[in-house]
Image (cartoon, rainbow, N blue to C red; front, side):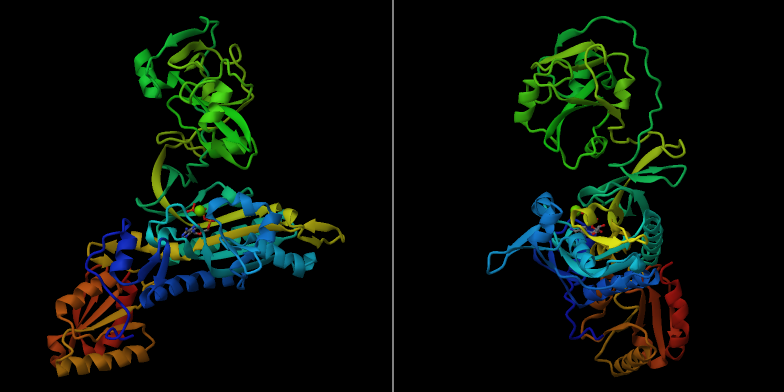
Length: 570
Ligand code: ATP
Ligand code: MG
């Protein structure tokens, strides 16, 4: 491609972008914003997007998944069948047609694909079957502020698998997992597969693929000794401490704690460590209030609360509910003497305390010497807190530390959640009707593009891995007005194209400084510069990443080039 008439508007500075990938994609002229979270891919950006898509496509095809394209507009009736028309919440873009019928702009396609298969596949003989598409998704995200990392309109690869039995699902899940490893490795990403929560899509058994990056929104708990990695939402906390002895100690004592609300304030006022206090938080799980207890130095994990109760929606109770149940504002709540009887859940570490300090359900007061069982009862005990740095690895006993990550892919075992709700069945080998067992597997194609930049850039711009670079070679003619230079560059351009090399030719009449600055910003892996020595038959070849460079005879360039391309990612 020639740069002279290309739509490649580079900018020296941009103001609005926080994330480095967002800044660089705007500055290098890869994308432009139309509205919050909605972007145009300019020619270079679109080339990168297609590179990523094609790698994903190759690996999906390799494991026997079939590509199709599903509609982006989904009739509301389908989403009502699974209850997600309402449950999906405000992220679902809804539109009406001229007859006032409602549609969703598809954020994900479980309903649509299940609807398709229930009409087309009715025998186990056709199973297993894996289908995928690469398509624009729509989600009305609350905070679409990070460029392509979190768009409201974005490109996703979503695959769905259908099975007659669990073993078959397990096998495809393994294949997908391996395909994802291949994809993210080929894309040059430093990533981890982490154990994760299934979220609104539902089902058990899921992994997220996380690109390690300080800019990530997710926190990953990783072991320093083994390869254990889990989303902190999911990381299992093993109880390593011994239960304290419960001596028949002093009775409950109420103490005044005027103006002390936070755990730290109360602990220092009472001159005890925060681990002697117990936090009591009121949640509402599927409409029912429950009290959750964790030690003062721990954080409640609402996903674990939800899972222990096998619920679907778990939220902190609002002030009104707190006042109804406890008779006080939140911050003074405790398990002893609630106004309304609710289920009490305790983290395992709470159960090990011989005695504890809790809120008194009275403003500015706490209760000391409180004993579980003697003074209040617990309905359910479990692991209900977030893992913390320094905790024990649940797999090997090593030490947990935290890293930030960007979720680029997600593989789920859905089971029969959708096929049951939508009555999608097939006849098994005994002629009996069974619901399809399903899996689903997503990759955020456009988010991947931004993630690659988060990991591959320097102070001067993007540093693309060869596999995703919009072009492999950037050919620069320093001075197009110079006849010699322009002639050599033109013939090199023709030769490179002839040899099947993807080449961008800077044939603009710009100053050399502008051309080199732009070249660094664009991040194409191999640069060939035709300058003052064109007359002597010499050009310069240079790698964007390492900066390695050499003067090469123009006549030898094509022979030498493959070795340089090979080294470009090092
Ligand atoms: P997140 O927690 O980041 O919102 P999600 O769990 O909602 O992601 P999935 O429903 O699993 O995401 O979607 C599959 C993949 O699509 C994700 O792994 C991610 O790479 C990508 N993705 C999700 N939301 C967005 C978005 N708003 N913009 C760009 N990519 C996205
Ligand atoms: Mg989301």
